[in-house]
Length: 93
Image (cartoon, rainbow, N blue to C red; front, side):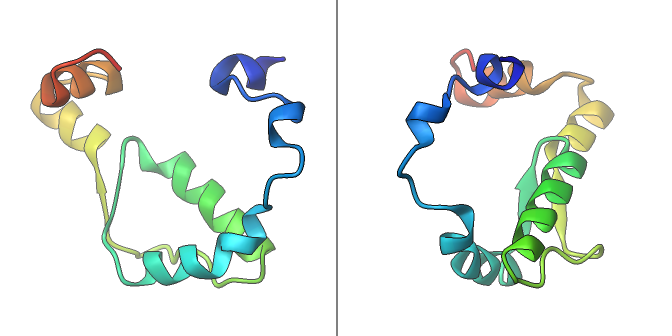
C-alpha cells in the first residue's frame, strides 16, 4: 500500500507488462555513453545499478559521471525537488 501511494501503480497495472530485463541492455548502453543527471542521485543510482546487475548487465560504476541537482540546489538555493521543478519549469511538480 505504501508503494502504491507513492507512484499510483497497482499490480494490475503492471500485469503483462515487459520486465526491466528486457530493456536492460539498451539502458546499459545509454548509461555507458552518458553523463547522468538526477535529483538526490544516491538512491536512484544504487537501485539502477542493482537492477542492471540483476538483469546480467555491468551496472553503474562508482565513478560514473553524475550531475546531482540536489547537491547543486543545496549549495546554491537550499531547495527541494518541488521548488527546483517550479523554478525551472514554471509549474508545480
